[in-house]
Image 1 (spheres, rainbow, N blue to C red):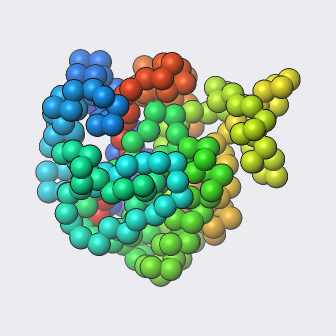
Image 2 (image 1 turned 90 degrees about the vertical axis):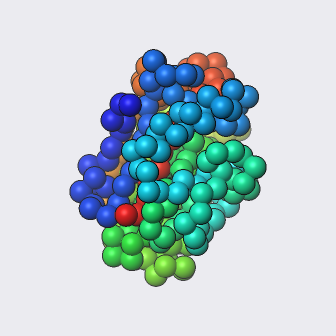
Image 3 (image 1 turned 90 degrees about the horizontal axis):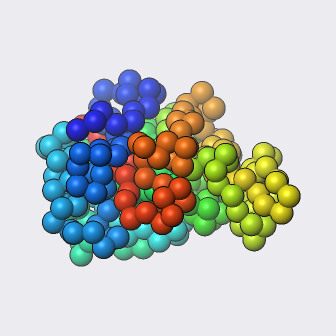
Length: 250
């Protein structure tokens, strides 16, 4: 298996593990990890088990992502939504936990995955932010929830904004762009189209939530430009593959 993408700020933390998976041309479905897109579930499960071999002592948590602003607190080390969708956490796009040996998982193919770690309170979070979730400020709300439930200080939180579609490739109409009109540099207008910068908008949410800019690491990888390494729904005309971004405490 490929190494995958790693953030330098999170990699320096001894008790925090994370990874953003990449395509593997030699694997079934190019190493897609999606159980919800009608591929052979047995083959996808094999891919998931191959991934889990790197973290054999961890319980993996998956959700049924719905582009919501719903946040779930994981309170026990019990595997959910990994072998099948039947026990996945319903209607949820952000996970937070302080439990050890739990791997929080987000699946994407252009949307923005964000990984968070509070090294003082030992809390991690994984967030899925498409344009709808970003409009609903799911990332800002996740930081707030970390404060409320775990007494996190935003100034302590480390963040990684993982590969996602960039403003170079994410063309939208005004009905989408208008939701971000008040945010500086949220988009670049090209005639009657708008090139939306979702990674930047989510970084702004982190800053507004109180994170220090030095603690926010941007991958600056566009999934559409780097389609050889990452699934891109836009670039691949509605692809069924998904890559995973996950984080957990040792």
